[in-house]
Length: 80
Image (cartoon, rainbow, N blue to C red; front, side):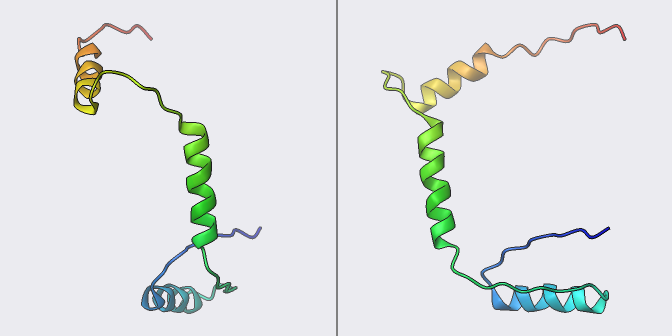
């Protein structure tokens, strides 16, 4: 059974190191080179589309404080 792993790096030195290691291990190496700026742009657009936002009177620090203060840290008994 074949397994595939994709490692993206912007450093030529890191790429050469990883490729050399794979070859020393006797693994089949297939190279692809390209510009990933479009992929990052697409990911950023999708993230903005699905994250959402709302307008409110609270600052980010106030919202953070509200979330932390709403947490319940008390222990509880669990029967398994």
